[in-house]
Image 1 (cartoon, rainbow, N blue to C red):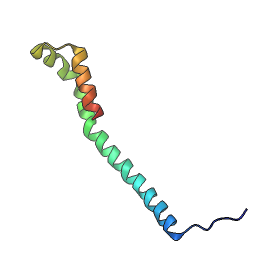
Image 2: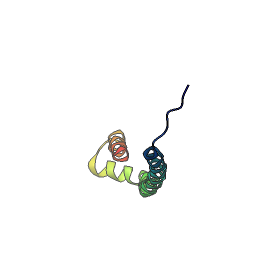
Image 3: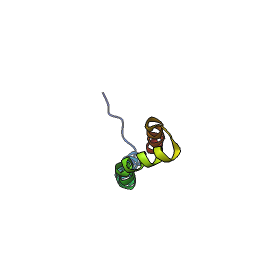
Image 4: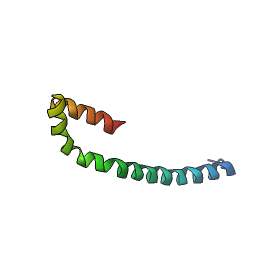
Length: 70
């Protein structure tokens, strides 16, 4: 079988995609660092919220899960 020549634009496109992966990784790490403190500290707020608003802990956790997903 004959090989199909690869246009030079494809090489540049692949190089751009490779660098974009690093940018995505860096942004993902930044986002995880920003949210991590809220995730770990969340347990401190569950009981005060439940006491003040008389919500069940399950309802509070659903709200927190939606927050984490968004």
